[in-house]
Image 1 (cartoon, helix red, strand yellow):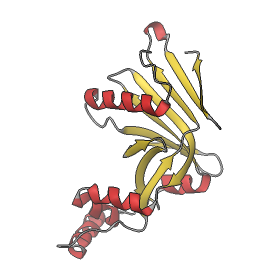
Image 2 (tube, helix red, strand yellow):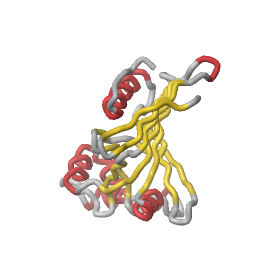
Image 3 (cartoon, one colour):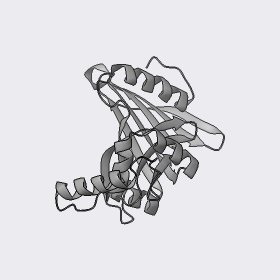
Image 4 (cartoon, one colour):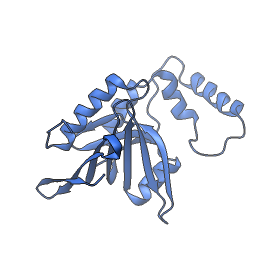
Length: 195
């Protein structure tokens, strides 16, 4: 591994900047793993929308399966796989809701159709036909015609505050390089993992 940063957030920022230059599509796509209160795991792809020393942020409908699981357990894990760089980044830890001001600010940057879709969709729930969703979308277009689209009350974001972070780089003959950061009261402990 050529990066010597001892701050995992600074190292992530370096890797993420490189991924934005090399990944053809969605360099901010990450697998988000959650579990039910009973321990049943579930994973799906979401888009990272912010990161800093507080953690990693994404947004969703709070009535979706992933949001219900996050609210029930308060824990998650994320994974980025940047195939072009032959790297992975993993983080796990507690999650919390972003504040309303942060959610409002991000929602305002979304395209109008994405804003309307947040109102029209009952995310993750059964849909009888695509025509039903398209009709609901048209209703939202009419409802907000000519005006700003406010953030729906059931739509916001989560922040994962990692307690464990791993940087993985591919190595020839599967002799990979794995760098692990574990949060402590005073900052981060760092070590290596066998490939």
